[in-house]
Image (cartoon, rainbow, N blue to C red; front, side, top):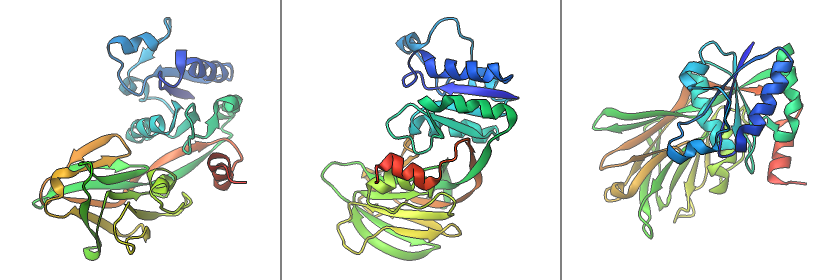
Length: 288
């Protein structure tokens, strides 16, 4: 078995967590390879310890059986893209503040020994296809594990939004934007915007208006069979942009339409602990 270790060097200082994981895995007969989730330039390379062999992601992942990443949810979202590209399951070790997507905390890394004996399970998570259509041509496409947000760009100005579901007009309202999320993403931007928590095994598309000016604009939980589209009203497009999993900003222009539907791709998360989703909610959100 070969496992690629992908630490965020700004979260995993000195790559201490990655090196500890490497020792645990190698002592259990697992081959490891070390890579980074993004390129480090200039002074950024100073955060890397000497004497370690690093490979580029595209060199490390072919031939690997799993990807382990070290960081917060942002790091997991970033590395999940690589995992999906190479059809690898991913395991997240939380070094951030919340870490809903992570399977283990730093203090639980001894559980990594289970990987050598196959004592783990795989959980599949729904993803969203996100497109922008301009004059009947798709000009942008991405895939989201958490969410995509259509947001205003100008301070002090709201944007008008037209929401459709399967080409049927659902709502017109003004506000700061809209978050369209998967069940996995319901504990991300969606919950901050007042949306519902949806357990990840459900296959739904969640639409949550951000600071709407009308009382009737409420969060909606739709079937994963639906196609959702958003269009900024004329005059609002110049101040709108689309962010996918918090990593890309695509600027809208007049007539652009953002289209969201369930993706054929899934993210496969490795599960080692006996915690349920509701245990994680209690731990992360602080419910009693």
